[in-house]
Image (tube, rainbow, N blue to C red; front, side, top):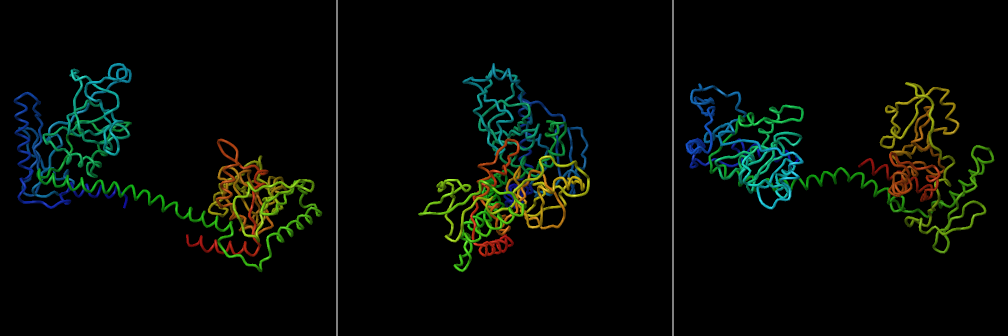
Length: 523
């Protein structure tokens, strides 16, 4: 369960009288409300507040709830308004019964900066931005209102501020620890009770949130003061309020702490399979996943065969000779690279990312491939159906997702592009623009061409092993370092061809891939 859901459940239990037990020795809420009415009458006589001629009085009779509005009003059954049952010692009231609900004063930017910023004395002025989502209030915002400016309404210490307009309406709420002036998008809930925590928690309850949401109006969303004053609220006996508050004070911090741990755990849980997969792939391409077999033909022999195969293809004019062919070898504990027939050996120790078994070899990607090209930079006119045109967006979980292909070409377009790419079953399709590193083995007999966002790679080593290398941290770091572009980064073919690949013996490549498939199936 999410922390927010748990908090809502507990707050709702509290508002229904189910969080702490009732005590029959408690003075009932009806007596508390009677004292509030007497206190109001006293303040009216002292001309400190005005009489509300539409004062609400809610009472039970024969198992039903009735409301009488004003002295001359007739009792009306309000059973349909009552959202849930409450204990017999509790009462329902309109929020306005508690005392007063009112908004503050707006200040325009110029006035705020010229008249009320940088003052050393006065009431701190609280705007919506100063009430935080964690219920804290920022008093030190640099804006103060002189105490002799009577036009500004004051929210007294202990009262509750609630945002009632804008994107934060109904979600930002706090209890004041000092007298303040405040903005017109905030409502002050001022009561006769010194401890307003029960009201504070009620305004966070699911019941209030639902009511608030239903009363929102306007483009930016807000609830007027008149509607707020008319909201129903359950009132427990005063002593029970204190027990509820103490219980919530104890539970809410623990729920918030749980939320932090839950969020961290959820992130860890969602990232764990990918991180574990990356770690396993890294172990695999470093020769640490499966044991080496001394009977395996070493990678050096495999590379020699690839070299011979390339010579054959060159003679048959199926591929062109690479005058800058790379040859990497180890001598006296150091790695050297010779480029082309006339190149001088250069130590490349700084390029070697990690140690590999003695039966493995380092080589450039181009050394082990007979084809590395990209898709069309100027694809043929788009058709609604026909021969698919692949892009990196069509690689999904190491497969080509033909259902996601939205671009097609006709035979003319295919015949124009295919001689260069010639995508065949077994080729590696690698994302090199945008989602760099997305990789799949082409397993279909369908005719296709590709867009420039993918590279088409025909390799002479085990294609599934090379695809695993492209999924590894080794390639991701390489791509991140050497890709170019701002809006959409891309890896140039020349750079791709220079990528250093750790090459195991062929039999070991197959054992590695087999074990990776078994492990990833479980993930």
